[in-house]
Image (cartoon, one colour):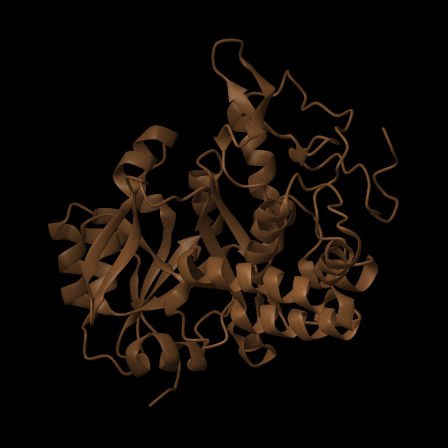
Length: 373
């Protein structure tokens, strides 16, 4: 095993539990085997049981460094290792112990709590109906969501190809933008910005809403084995130095596919990599994105809901998931914080919690001391 204290390069990282095989045909991941009582490696064949060539999102979720550090210390290699590494999890480690090890890393990286600023209706949905709704990235407040990174990347790619390649480049970026019109990731946003005036103002109805403060450890534990991942946003596009620029340039100029089996695989990675980038003007949000993987149009979690418009949302049933993972629902929450300009009383919200059988949560209700007005 290589020395883990050495600076990470684009090679073996023993902390990664997911990777592609060298031929690009299989995605491998670790999971708990209840029958044999150990952690095993599963292989999914691209195109059979797996429609995506798994993106940078999982790479980042398993990495000890944050994304900004990686940009500064690496050659912007955002792809998975393309070799099957000679690493196995300690088979004597139980399922829960293995998860706890990962939970500790998440808490170290994101902090003990993560804040979701929202309105009263969303609060009632989460603690009353015990559901989390993941919205499409299409409806995020950043009008350049996804497309800003792609447009920046497009400019850089065109700047490094000659006129003979422009027709092919037009076709490639045409396919990318066509995919973007019908394939958006589903996202639930939380933040490391705690009791933050700007967050109250922007996302909690000018401070009249609430903040649902999640216990990071319990939230990460809940999603760890359930194809839902947590990622920190990177603010700024920096396409000029981005690995995707090199990949697209080489494909357009030389038909070089690197370790992808086809162009769709490359586009899969690009679209999901774009989800990790936002305009630098949003950097104060300190956003952490939680996203379900492998969502297709037939996914049972997708439903249409009437908000201000009719929208498709991904609904996660917290009751079912907590029961499956042996987690007390109320332990997911560190507190419920009433917004600084809200007329909501602590007493009435406590009564609402108790009326829903959430006695522990009732004792976690408090009012923000943020001086926003």
